[in-house]
Image (cartoon, rainbow, N blue to C red):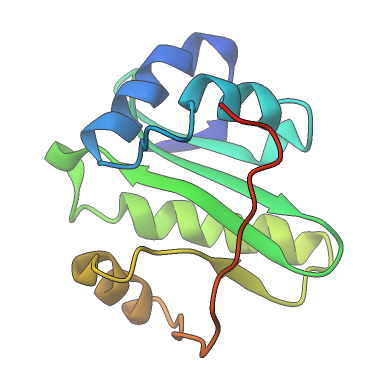
Length: 138
């Protein structure tokens, strides 16, 4: 598998991947999320490619205080092959190269399978409450 930055031809395959992985929500337009990411640190929008097909993604960002990962997704038929782990390792590497001291991500509390995945990678559950406010309705 090859990890590289997103290019426009990946657009439909990435959205399809996010849909297959259950990451798309009615209040988040995936096309708009891609367009927004491409305006800020587009090189940190990672795609895993195997035999010419998109099999994984990770949307990474760093605002100077913490690094974040969104939309980590692996094609269901390719899960368990180390693709998610490789994408997270690349995200960590890219963030450390920018001097990022800590990486964070959000996982839905009922997604126990994904929580176990991150725990195996050394991530800890924090005692925090996530707050949010929609500024631009999708």
